[in-house]
Length: 387
Image (cartoon, rainbow, N blue to C red):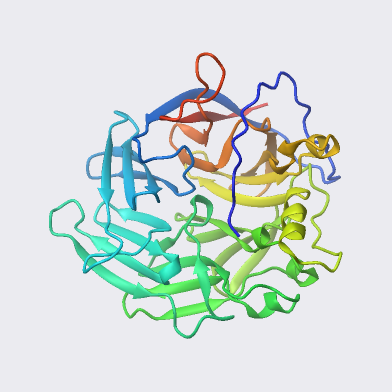
């Protein structure tokens, strides 16, 4: 159900930009330019790919951190973005202090960290973590039996939990697999958890596009970001060229934010819904995914994956690696740029924003150019510039 990456590093001297398919004009005034790099040393327990990242600024000591989840040892890694030093905090899965198998997290502040264990349908709020007096509050995400009203909560970089006004907001993938288009009118994928009384409210925010289903499982996973200054959720549905702007559970508006390389995204229409059909449909069709708010430059970045037409035509095994592109939106959600990244070079799902720019993960090649450095986590830092 979840996103998988195949690491295929190749030397590409000249790879053509994807074919422009959309006829909608936009003010193409801004672009992204790689200006710097940063490298983090990894320990022996950590792989190159982590789909759970968060940028966190600690106001108490004016320090900035890249925090990521290591699912191999149920730990959070805090990397200081200036010194590059790391602090590792491990959490037991079981026992009286067990938090389950962590699948997501949210560092609200240095003393309040939410840990998600989606397979156990629970969340732990950890406080006083660095004060030596750790406290824990447990919450259940199940109000009934597993079904249309339950979901596996998401905790990836692009759809992590959001906290505000004593409520935790959660995106999820419904537990029941879709069998018809009516599924999307009933199944819930947005949950709100009250930290005060542990109550949960749930609703469906699937767009009308889903009524034309069925869709591969990857398209069931929504992405979002939060603009704290104006208290708005901005949601990126995978099958829609529009984003959803949420000012509340019942105040949702649509805004065009499509790619110039995507004309349409269609559901599976051959009557089959087996695993192979779902996978091939996903790889051979475009899909929108993560959206990031950049509060330092007052823009949004919406990511889209375009089917790798060249590899598909050549029956190349790299056809499963889609070509990423980044749509730039103004603070009013007006499209003001789009940048296609070269294929095979970046892991866009491993991206975050800081005052220095947009960070996108890029594996570090060995000096011999044969293979990659497995003990280094690399990022290119992109600057927003005028064309």
